[in-house]
Amino acid sequence: MRLHHLILPLILVASPAAADLRVIAMGDMPYGPPVKTYPLFEALIGKINDAQPDLVIHVGDIRGGRTTCEDAILDQQRIYMDQIDAPVIYTPGDNEWTDCHRNSLGDFKPIERLAHIRGTFFDDPNRSLGAAPVKVFHQGHAGFPENTRLRMDDILIFTLHVVGSDDGESREGGVSKKAHKARRRANMAWLKKSFAQTGDAKAVIVAMHADMFRGAGFKKKKQRWKSGSPYEQIGEALAEAAGEFDGPVLLIYGDGHDYTVSQPLSKTLPNFVAVEVYGVDQMHAVEITFKGKEPKMFLDKIVNPALGN
Image (cartoon, rainbow, N blue to C red; front, side, top):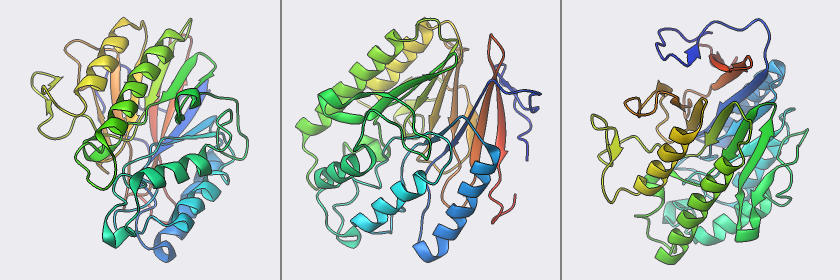
């Protein structure tokens, strides 16, 4: 099913005759009891494999807010990612670690859950996930192997470990202010270093979990972050870097569970497009195709055959 009614100048909705680079993005799934949601997720994986993309991106929240944070739940998602034929890059969401202190989720220490995620999904930080992993660069030397970067054709792609729920800033349960600030500094450094590596790249894809544009922290009319917002620093840094880049910059994110295509910084950044992926009950994916030497972006919907449109 193609997406219609998009008016953004950087995006077209008709399927291209030939694809230069095809990326499929998803996130905030699978949510709910495994007996119900895993077969649906398996159906989506099959559809993604049929599409034969060059890369798959999962923007985090690999378990629902009411499913426990136990090892078996998290480990199963690594198994699923490796069943995807294409290379896969994944950036964590808040559900798999910052929220796990709740009694109903197993009363885990979030930092311990993050350590388990790093050991499970980033055990070899030099390679992506997926059945056909590719070499990636990473920030493991600084203790953040989940921040990865790679280049495919003329497109630079990197992840930032920025999560929903105020980036974990307001979460109790073992995430110290020191640890939070260290992750924020690491994200800022990785953002700066990644844009410094663009070279002759024609476009940039940035993937994170957080929806930085939702709620009172982002002033939509003024198109800027409120002073003191958990996302102010990284958002402003991303905006500055995108403004200095001569080409399209695509932000892929999740958290809100509502498929959205927007230009939230259109007044100053006409080259910046943000795509929020499907999620939760809408267990579909988004296909982004970059076409041409001066790349245009084409969007399409990967419909889960177990759900229909």
